[in-house]
Image (cartoon, rainbow, N blue to C red):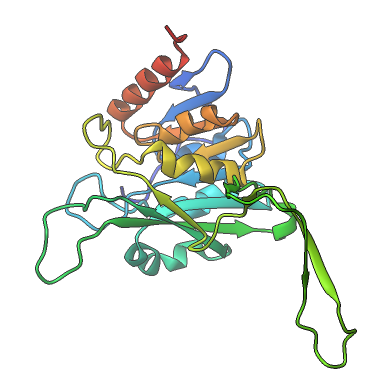
Length: 268
């Protein structure tokens, strides 16, 4: 996807391709760099999976300028979770100028991607990098805590004090049977989407939902400017957030609509 040469006038009315009856999800079709300046509502965060630009596939073209377009659509203090490879982030590092790196999540696929190679490791992982702007304390954060087997209540532990410090100083904390997810900062173990795959590079829900939950408050609006199969939208609905999606391919947009309509069907 090359940089757009003739964007639509900012004053032109922006008509959704699809809007859920309850307004939880809105979908636009077109180039995100043209649509983002015209969004009627400001998202509070972004979670997306752009083309990495690493293969010969026609769809795998890095959309130059999309990071800047997202930055202008978000508030001054905002989070951007972006999937990619280490190679992609190194090659496109200048695109993230003005953002600060916060943490990374590692998706372990369990099954390799592509044919095996005798001179390279079989690739079974992808990264999601968390970029942010503004003061860290002004951003929303909510990692879903991990359960542990212990629940010790109030825990007191003597600290190793320096000689000049007070003897016997202790620290304490409340053990509620959970703990903060650990480094890499979040390890996601989920198999790739295979037999029900709706897009060339569809991510499983388990890789996306915790990232949306981390950076978007309940009821908040999360942006995906390259929506693919709509995984961000479904994950947002599942964890009580709203989503605005942009997808360049109308064929993919039709798949997203079908997916969202199925999601809205009452359970049998």
